[in-house]
Length: 205
Image (cartoon, rainbow, N blue to C red; front, top):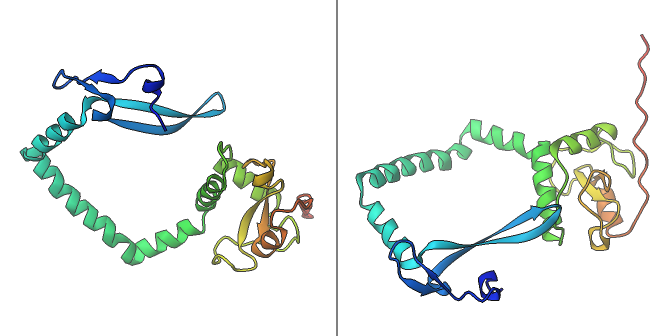
């Protein structure tokens, strides 16, 4: 994709470190996906220093005592983080996260974006409210759905888009319902009207 700067007729830039005017190809370009006013766009930033100066600054810094101390600290911390998943506490934490609403939301967002979705409006609070209204049951067969079972289990909790993504369906609380793995696989990309949330059972006093 051509640089926005090129489209504005700018082909060179002055490096703030060496003060030399160099072509834009001599500078690093950072891009990030942003959303403004509900519209996604690509934010583009050309670094203020050229690649050569940035590399020299980093090389010089690595030779300082502060850099060497930071590197030692990073190695020690990194080793601790690498070994943590192998401990009993780490295994418990991983299992707890895999069975959490936060992980379900993260996976659903990643899947939505991978299938061409752009803006994601669903929050943890929206998802918790949705699952609460359906009382952790499938919106198609009313069977209980479970968070803590493996992918592929018939009762595995999944999020189904009532209006499929390839037909313009969004990743919102209004277009999502909880579904068991079996019903979600059977539904595929067809449009099936889900059942309404089950009525809350009244408890006698």
